[in-house]
Length: 70
Image (cartoon, rainbow, N blue to C red):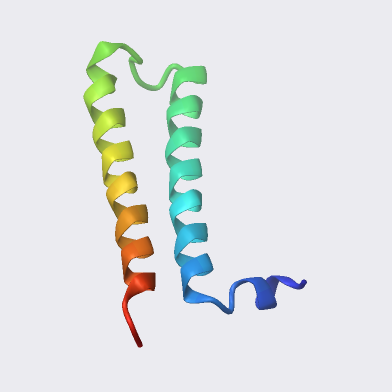
């Protein structure tokens, strides 16, 4: 299965975008920690929890949209 065939489904595309956003977020946190660009401590916990709650709601809404009749 080629890449274009894999992303012909809107649902797969939206899931791929969600995973990409999570990867960018995690890589940004990791790079900032490794290069000491930001202080990684307890102040970051609410940001991370809020982001993952947002992404959880995103994936739930994409799944619910797939259940709607055309």
